[in-house]
Image (cartoon, rainbow, N blue to C red; front, side, top):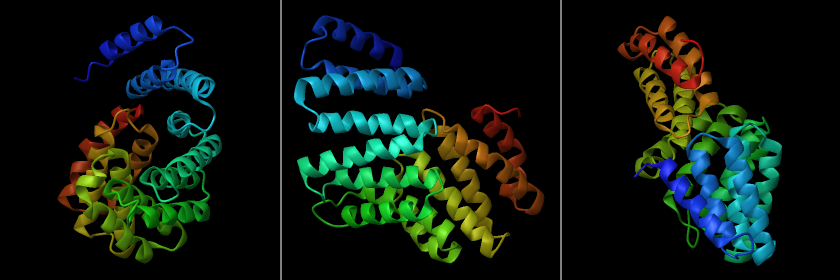
Length: 272
């Protein structure tokens, strides 16, 4: 229903009813952490998710897959506030628990590899990111780990790492393949937007006047604005690039960007 406040109240009431010693407490705290994250409150999300991790470890042991779920969510919260070193540490433990529980070729392992790649990329460790995304791709592309959503996530990240390490000609086919998985990639608008933006940059390096460049930049803007919570860092990076496109490209898409810059600036928290 989208009623986050209502969901929060129901979960808090259920947590009070269960009490601190109930073995299912951690699962409810984990759900409450997700609600806070969706509401754009990373501090509350972190606090509740860390409580969940501790409660689940106490009730079920440190290697239970639900502990991995909590660590995964903690890592995403850390990544959202640019604490990528600790995000990678949480994700590596998550990967190990999932691999021990489900096997090394499970989709959950592939997805965790992809998230490791994303945090490595965000802190500038492009070679480590490339290796992690390749591992995610290899698992997600074939049984038993085949998963279109995870494959799209892995390819989107792999293309961005290739853009940094190997240049536009190497990155373009990977990014095109990621975006061709349209419905699968639509599950994560931030990932989709990042892939669109990366492909725009790759195309612009070959032909600054390619009409797809402006279309992809605007599509990336739409993807980021549609995400919840708003990815402010990505929007902030997009705004000046849109401005440069408007100054150097006479396309209709570029001329529209003067309006788009104001929308992006508002969503990203910058002055319009």
